[in-house]
Image 1: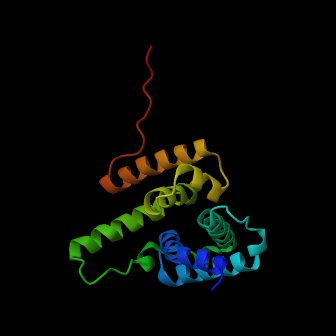
Image 2 (image 1 turned 90 degrees about the vertical axis):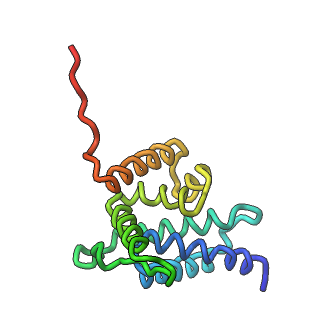
Length: 169
């Protein structure tokens, strides 16, 4: 196994976890990882030796996912109930309900907020790595993350939407 194969293979578990969180279902996540790895392998000559392989692969996955979402017709959209997470045997009923609620809440976030939230919170990417992977400025990462966290909190707690502004004379 050469160095490139080893570097790519090390990232597969992270790619699978992120793909699963993005798509919400195992089959779609496996397809996304497969498409990502195929594109990465065919474009390996574009990767700069010494740069971050993880960020490069996440950038490819992000682009593949966006292309898949754009190409989806309304009939192909997955319902929230279809994407229940597979849970380990040790989980209790309440654990499963909480995970299902969290998954449903994540699905309600706009794609751009969900992507940033998953990269920072789930994959523990730095703001800089996230910005590079998504091709956006660091300030945009921070604002999307802030809005995603606030919105996720409102969804999970059942709080009403953003507070309305009060006119003061």
